[in-house]
Image (cartoon, rainbow, N blue to C red; front, side, top):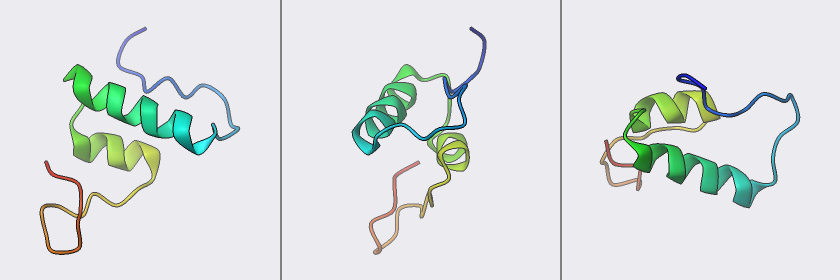
Amino acid sequence: MGDTYGRDTVEKSPPMEEIIRFVTLANSGRFTVTKLCEQFGISHGGNDERGGLPG
């Protein structure tokens, strides 16, 4: 499978499936949260007072 994010289709998955995919990939250790945020099109935000995702 290589280093892919498992998003082969143009259609967006339902939000809960996207969350589960993100968390699963983050927990796998294969990708940084920063790279996953870029791929999923969300703001990383860092560890600031706005509640961004940690590193």
